Image (cartoon, rainbow, N blue to C red):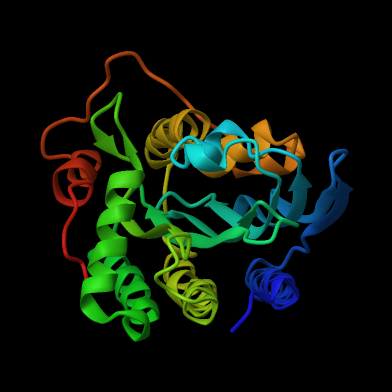
Length: 304
């Protein structure tokens, strides 16, 4: 099967629409839609909710951009592609609930071509989703991971799921803190770039991960939407959100690619939470609910 970029684009636009519709119905407040153009080529559609009834901030972004040379974040691990023209499209989302008992969530699915317009371009798919809880519930974490597992099983069975789970645990890790950002999920990149898997397989896995997002996360939000919380929980949520910001600005390849390739800054930094706190040399009290996040959840486990 040949590369069908129009099919990828159509899928991504439909995925963005479907997710926004489901979460508008859940929150009760409409998303703001903002179409934009990139000076170097391409553009996108940002759909953002702020100060919603449930979500403090959230966004579901579609982008389709072109360029004359891959930026460093995309070519660092493939120096043979440095200087190549590129085409990139994807959907990326983040939801930051106001309620600290409901986790933050991130999902991204994307498609790249390096050497676009040349006789033998190199293409690949990437994506994944991950969960960042503050006061976690084991049933929520297990549900999220089981849904991720089921999305991958048709594309390589349990070994492929375990590979993508480990990749996620390794990727969403703050090296300067020696600490996981959250409880992981799935992550994959460069799928198809080595020529061992065809477009149909790679695009199929990408679609399966994208389609799994709503069933992975919406039931958790529905369970936690009425859980009571106070200032203590909000304060800890703001502290842990600091880790989210640190990862996105220091390590995240998608954020770096967007900024380095001249993407729309407002849309890229939509992923950051609106209220964040940092403290000097702070640690949770032993035996506290806050300490349980570190002791019981931030160390990778076989949740599924």
